[in-house]
Length: 379
Image (cartoon, rainbow, N blue to C red; front, side, top):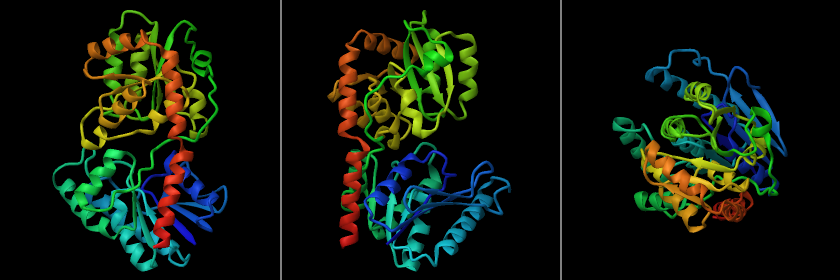
């Protein structure tokens, strides 16, 4: 059997898709696995991974055209045509789409290839930050119509699974968390060694995309207001707010920027911190129900975690005594919560965090995912 995964990214750090295809290959569910994505100037057009996994980044003739809505539609149509024609003779048995916008293409490929269709919803796709008005109505209409023809839907949190089941009256989708592979608990010291943080300072790590809606500016303002540098914030990642962080770091001794590192070594750097923070803002239902991969990466590195009061995140942290929850979204509220957090038994929280990470590791998620494929392919 052959499997095609279609992504609308340039496939730079797609850890969820990589884990999925590696698991499917190791379990010998498919003889060949293909990944289709978009090309970037600094990226290889074709790559091969362990087993028989082949990535193709498609170069679009429309890529350098302006980024207005009409042109974006033409770019999308070109990409769809290129994917269809490139794989049409490869006898694809299962098509996986990794975004709501790819569902129409997935349905077409299902019909034309006579294949099964898997919809991997990386978030609550129609309830995301910035999706509103006409685009939201069209998105909900398309998802509601096409999801009835999907052979398996995968989601990333328990509440999102309940939402899909209730909203579209479908069987509750399997939950496959964005969790890392299990690793031995081992502390490192990269941040202190590479950017000169003192041994007596406590490192609070923000790891991930430096974008709006994730509390980056709130954390910055909170640390600007702190009176000493006993607790320092390290922002590791990339994104549109990178310049703001670098500017703050120039004037405040308790703020540091560290560039993003490759996925295969990210936990080595994560384990160089003393605690992690995930301050998702409640700007949409998808964020309220989110379970971001950095939450489990912090835990797998043995870090206690400070989170905002989003439903699934705060429940996990509170029930397992593995960190603290911030309820007041202001610099003063964040600092009050951080000061209280530092008075707690961080050693016991580290033990709890690592235990929860192991209980929810990719090895556990892989089993649920493979069971889902087995049920689908045996129907």
